Length: 214
Ligand SMILES: Cn1ncc2cc([C@H](O)c3cccc(CNC(=O)c4cc(-c5ccc(F)cc5)cc(O)c4O)c3)ccc21
Ligand SMILES: [Mg+2]
Image (cartoon, rainbow, N blue to C red):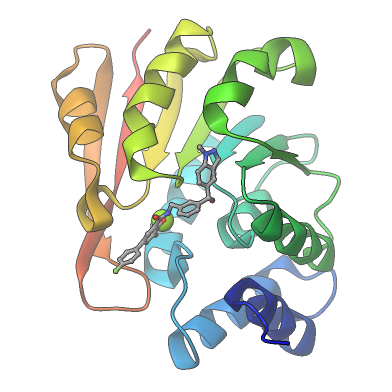
């Protein structure tokens, strides 16, 4: 039977990456997606910007919206301090199955909690069900029309504190116009655009970093 793209990405990790070595997992996925078949990972170019923001924030609690195959999940978790935790939300069970295996191959199960479900349903349960106070860093990489409603939902649920950092992928391609307008015009956010390219291509894309001012 025909394999899926996520299954082929997992295969590339298992064949080319070293168990327990997160950076080799990231490298294996980037090499596969650059040379064999494109996939919607944040990728190596935007990934370096992601790395620098994660290192600067040095977060104890991270929320990722949209796991896919776990590329950015592993990339972020590999930079977290010892007791830090990353919660990643994935609604597609097929993606979740693959991501769990990619995360396991990287040896990062202890830092990462993958929760299956839709962000709009899970965000209101974060405090009671997952014992979260607030998030130091949120990486938005799920459906682009959910970035704005979920940001408002996180505010309403008290999940953002003064200084919480939102980092959004794909603000140019595919684009998140309503979200961009909101964070750039709201007095409650300090926003900055990091120009880059769509993963594995020469098309313009970028990350928007927005600090919640409380
Ligand atoms: C509600 N909820 N809660 C959790 C949750 C999780 C998911 C899934 O992880 C999921 C499934 C499908 C699509 C996405 C969003 N990602 C994209 O659509 C994307 C596209 C492109 C691109 C760019 C150019 C093209 F030509 C084609 C695709 C480049 C990129 O980097 C992307 O992130 C995310 C979805 C909704 C969810
Ligand atoms: Mg993306």
